[in-house]
Length: 324
Image (cartoon, rainbow, N blue to C red; front, top):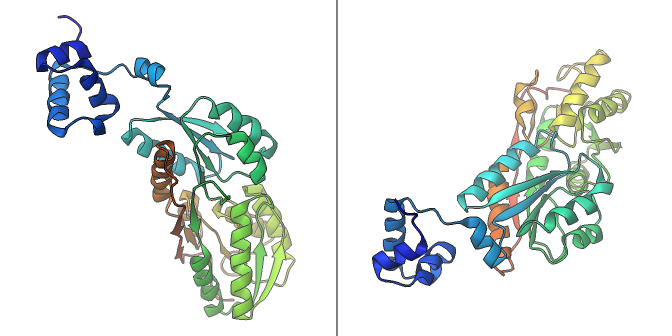
């Protein structure tokens, strides 16, 4: 059997080869009835367009870059999966790069990958805005959980959920509460800290700020030492991984959650649900973050200027909080 090409399909339907080509590369430019005829015949004949050749001609790679600061953070794998699934549905592939929590490497990594893809999704970068803009250049880009002038973003806004978490602690009788701050270079850590400060001022509770601490299990254990030495009976942590470290660090000192101290995490990763006690936390809409990021990037690659999106987090009380 001879190889099926756009020319043989065109001859069979008595149309031009360019029309057949556009049905695959720019389907919106082909009349619906003609496009359906082309795609149906191609399916019958087992034709698969040569994506490599098409990309060489158009300059479109069909790939998007995805930068993450630390793939070992439990928040990142579900986000990567959501972005990859959304990209596959749009016939795109994902090129992943991990900074391994080295903010000094971000410029080089983003610059290197930007030259190989049609656009970039940059999740929770630690570098200053000027560095990120320099790395991206003129390549279309979308930020996840970071806001920057001139770059569309999708973020999880935990402000309301953190207020609910604070009121939950007050209802349990806690009046002196610790804020274990996350990494100083983290935009999300800064926003979460400010949300807790604002709530504490209005709630008239005593807020003790400790840290900053790394967004890691060991960072949480370090935070537990400062928390245990303070008069606070409950603590907000930066994320669930740090919260797990706090719970472990407290236990090393003979303090148990929630009998002796209450602990609140953030993000609701798998660890939050399998830990004993299960973590009171803030659920982030990870799948929606990923899908939205891909959609915004698709719009930016197409030449549009997409609007940034804020998605709300949800407070989830579990077993790591109890009466003061």
